[in-house]
Length: 616
Image (cartoon, rainbow, N blue to C red; front, side, top):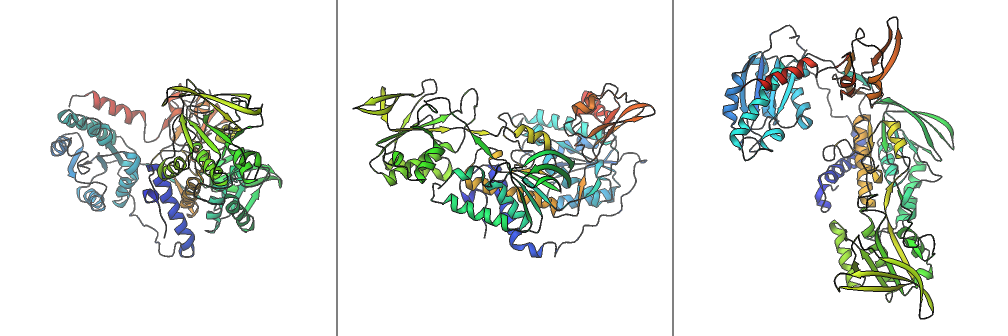
């Protein structure tokens, strides 16, 4: 039995999604021997050529339960759709995405002889593939479909303006109908899939995802920059709930090295990454020498670094430590730490400021974990935690209450008036004097500490930018890696075939990193378990007669999909349809209009603008 989502504890949608994917992956490990045994290849009817026929458009307007229906007058909107040019059929549906409704659309296409379909419902981002599939079931090219978003773009944002919302829904449908009349059939490409995977980063997340894929029969290449596997976990020794991190880590490392399907590269540096979904080629140097790895999927799990403080006498006084250094010295039994009379912890060092305005998420729990461990070893020790906000989220709040009950003293400070630390003497012995304003008591405090520890910020690795450029993936504003969609695709990148997990995404506790590692492995396996991968037909194409070889398009393309070839007519741009993601940036940059984006041509878009300009 496996657990996922909020049953584990309070969590947001992204965590729910990747824990669900992770649970599915672990089921896959258990049932791998049955993989593919009960599946049948789906067979679609032969596609009819309707390109020479006059458009016969069908419009299906969804109530989406009450999401659309309580705001938009759906029956009136259906009547309006029937009045539009080339619309030969229109009807309302309670839930267009339901199985029976999708089949109803397929049957209606056949019965009414429709050759274009508009579904007025929700976001194409979630359901467009489903509705395209209904066209394929009816023998139509799937690109004869257009989706009118009358939920996010209408009923949700104008929920208190029902009459205006109905008119706007009609405007949106009118624009979709106009565009549908100009749609052209496009063909997708099938590409073979290399069954091997590359995992970049040999920390807990990278090793977990590598083992999961290897246990399901796939060859995995695990690349680590350092001498040893383990990453940041090598500096962690115990968790709040008592897990022995080093024992777990050692067991995981042994499993990785002993697995015949996992190839480990340490002291590795990636020098080149090329290719496309299902067929990547990565070149690197490592302790094995130069290597060229061919693989179908990539998982980025490069981990994080820790901020090296310049404040609070760090680096000047050996009694000032970071929280990781404190944990290492507690684990080694250093009596200078465990036998201290007073220890002060200062939170939010190097983050939640103008340089890094994010919260490092794990620092509060790390400090409370160390405080409880110190109290267990030396109950007489005075432990102070100086904080801005305690963020022991979810079930970790129990440990915050436990620390309070163990007489760990929490004192809040304001960012504009942070604590001050200076080396001095107290009763003839050297101490670190920590001064701050206690806003509860309304007075200045001075604490004489034997040890001061700093909750140093978790920061992205310096080579994140290099990795992002090599694999054509995005970074967020703080230089952590950015997923394709925070809720719908929390472990995918916008670049197909490349996935994300662990603290490279954002600071996480060990269970969260492991959950996401299984989730990333699951997403990669949805690709690797297939023999072929299908690439979109909505890609850019070049009219060579109009191309003047200025290279503006090549500079605009984020995916390296455009190359330039010499012809008898001069230098010309050529688009690799496999690498092209159809974002249209090159299309907008081209000064001569030589590049056009299929399925979003000027004719199609201008027809929408003209329809919008027309009176309802």
